[in-house]
Image (cartoon, rainbow over all chains, first blue to last red):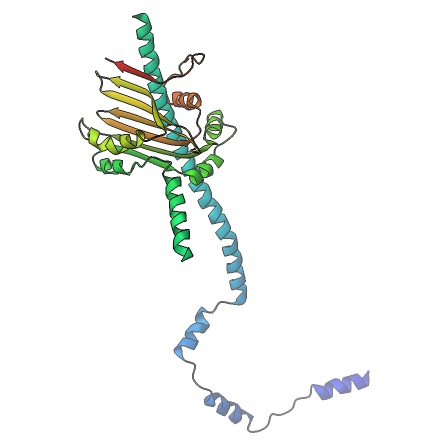
Length: 110
Length: 185
């Protein structure tokens, strides 16, 4: 037990940094090139990877949903056109048949 | 050398398929004069697509679905005008000329001198042609052209027309249908 304590004390004991450490760090920082405006801007607009994953998931859900909605809307529009076309055609045919029938009835009476 | 031949054959087939329907483009110029225009163009693929959206639970829609099952196209153009004389017989000449071509035969022609109504029904039959129907209703203030491509049951179509407020008639179906020409005075 005492050995462990001694080992910990030895490992965690404070050591003074070299005397020129601060100067060396400052010198290295001053030696780094200044980031360009593009690099600064790209940092601002770069989203974290998690956001990209979430965005991809939302898009992958929205695109098929939107496509189905668009297809349904087109189909409903085509259906209305079809019903109108059939009704118009049937109505005109019906009217012509009715008039032929009325004329033949008149002929029969005469 | 082969590519032009392939293109030429493709062009011939495409024009042959298109040629089954009446060319109604000549009527487009009347759209500017008309107060109300209905222009419906349902070719084969669009017709099938539209039919998929018809409900089997609705009796009327189910009838329409059955009716259009063998159709290749439906084309309807209606023009309503404010006053008489907005269009002339010359505007209809290109369509009448097509309806005089082989295969087409007029089965009904109804003329009303008093009201100026003129309704004609044409049928196309014969050969490998899918057949078809053309309805031409000419009124001083209204022009209606219907062209249906494919096999169609006229009685069923007429019955569906009765749903638009026109009472259904008890037409005598026992009599064989034959070409008729009636004039009303």
